Image (cartoon, rainbow, N blue to C red):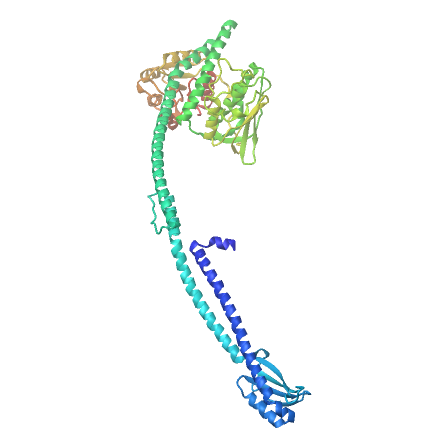
Length: 626
């Protein structure tokens, strides 16, 4: 009942409230009048029957004394012919029926009123009973009249209720009209598209409500307009600041790209010269000094690599190159890169062999693992670092990097992936507090690289117990024949004829000295003219051409490679000499040129190991892979 009442409208409720008292009153009146009419009709019938019975008893007194049956029969018949009399019976004092009229029609017990009166002998003082008279009076006509009256009353009641319902509905409609208008105005006010006002219909409480609504609506509209203006102004200001931030971000990315290119040129030359100094050097004192120089160069290289990776990620220069390869090849690369560092700090670097294959970008996966292992070794004083992979039920491979380092407190775990955020260890065992201390970009770069691979690096750590970094990559089916990694090939590059093109004389001098120490026949050039002059001395195309991408006066290494192809009459680059681009460029438009040409690229500063490995791959395969 309560739910039904809740679903009714205000007008329906008002009409119901107006109709219910009328209905109850009418029903009570009909019941009372009907009951009174029934009692009145019964009393009238009883009075009539008593009168007839008394009259019959008085007329029958003398014939009863004399036992005149004929006279009694005539009297009974005469009385029976009176209106509403259905049966007359005269009995003697001993109960003998002396006269009896038969009923002309059958009547039910509820339609007949029976009255019995004694006949008394008034001639004696004793007033003895000499007989009795029984008279049946029919109430059929009275009942019919009562029913007709009740029917007419019900018709009148129904008509009255219908009129009352119409009047109540119209009254409810009239009373609820201002409230319905207020409800519609509230809905319109919620849309807030224009000022809302209702008409004042009267001076009662409803009128006060209407006036209050108009005042509140006007105030709310003014406040809403002020808020919209403030929001619009704040939106414009936010857009202006966002534009400024985007401009600043683009400017920062361009600055990092330009700075990384210009600053890596001398760093690349320094790397080459420091590596050349160690060639064929046997003096321990000189080797120790050279080792310190190389350590400083590696520290600079580490810092520049962090900045370069961040710059390339922000400029979109890193493009995915999805391939299928064994996880072990990347693990072997990580082991080669960090096993010596781990041994220097008396730590264990355990890389668990696996037969799993993955489908992802090999370079990005190696960069992620290199950063994670480097970070783990930096913050581990005792124990070591474990690298492993495990197949998952969802068709992925989970790669884990465990360490037994100082751990990361919970308050830092959400921020260690932010740029330039570093956790202060306070003597908990950070090894690289000296020249190889990072900028706090390693884990930020890791997370961005992971996002490019459509995955996420997750961290679990306990202070004093160590940390575990995990991420997932798609699993790939095992290929039966896959080329072995480069470190399994011979790195002998002696006898190779190499043409090196770079606009930095210091770089040319350093790489020429380094390659000659490896037994290579080297020619160098700073631009197209010198490159073509060098080609004149070599009737046969060189084994390998190493070129910088961006040269002076707007020249491109790609253009010089094309000119050399034309000089040697090569119809397609794949049929001629191997080629390799070395650059410090990070701009995406420049790097797209390299990707379109499908030429392998190394980013400055290139370590001698990387360079030698690439050259060895060129000798064994006749081309370089990216």
